[in-house]
Image (cartoon, rainbow, N blue to C red):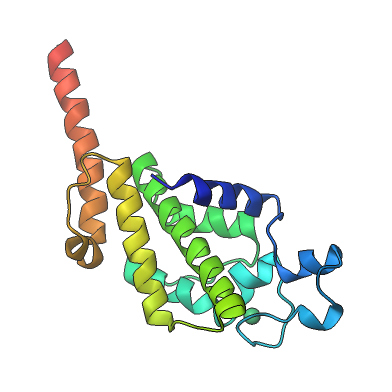
Amino acid sequence: MVPLKVSIFVWRLGLNRIATKDNLFKRRVLTDVEQGCSANCGLTEDMDHLFFQCDFYGKIWTLTCSWLGFSIAFRGNLMSHLTQFGGLGGFLTKVRYSQHIIWIAVVWVIWKERSRRIFQIKQENIQTLCERVKLLSFWWLKSKYITFDYDYQFWRLNHILCFSCLVMLLVSVFLRCAQFFN
Ligand SMILES: [Zn+2]
C-alpha cells in the first residue's frame, strides 16, 4: 500500500500543484534564471520535463522498464505516460495495479532525488535510484497484498513470476468459489 504522504504527492502531481521550479516562479518565489532543471540538463524544470521528458531522470524510466522486460518510447505528459505504463501490465486488475505502484515509485524517487540535489547538494547515481524503485515497490506491494509472500531478492530477480502468482492466486480463488457453489 502506498503511504499517505506519497498518495497526497501523486494527487497534487495530477493537479500540477507540486513545488516545481516553474510553479515557484509563477508564485514569484524564484526568479526567471533559477528555473533550471536540477539535473543540469539546461532546460526549465516544469512537471512534464522533470518526470517525463528530462534526459537524466528519464534514465530511471529506461532502467525500470528494462527490469520489467519492456522497451518503449513514452509520451511526455502525465496522463499519457501513466496510461502507457499501466497498460504494460495488460488487462488484469492486479497486474495493472502493480504496474501503477511501480510508476508511483518512479515519480516519488525522481521527486526525492530532485530535492536531494537542490537542498542537500548531493546526488545518487541512476542504478541506485532504480534499485530504490524496486525496493519501494516491493514494500508497497507487500503491504497491499497479504499473498505477496516473497523476499526482496526474489522480487528483484523474478518480478514477472511474482505478478503471475498474484494472478494465479486470483484464478485459484475463483475456481474454489466455483467448486463451492456447484
Ligand atoms: Zn532536466
